[in-house]
Image (cartoon, rainbow, N blue to C red; front, side, top):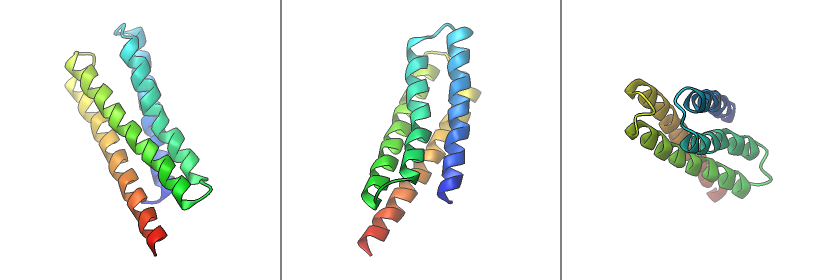
Length: 119
């Protein structure tokens, strides 16, 4: 997977998170957690975008590591929203699967860059 594919997948995920935020806020009247997942879920792609123009390998790893941390936070908010019945099973599974995929892709990209730095 290339960085452009990762970038596109993170952008698509961010769009889904923005739409989720709007539904949570407007239809389900949840405001606190919806802001948290909006921040974490959109931050993934923003950090990937920064990493694409990193000044060094270390900077790239740092930006992607931050993005990976944001995937973990997003997973937390998805689990909490689901347990509090703000997300249906279908909504939860779909979003959770996407964020897990992003997390795996980020991990693979970080490991690839670390291996390049060693050689």
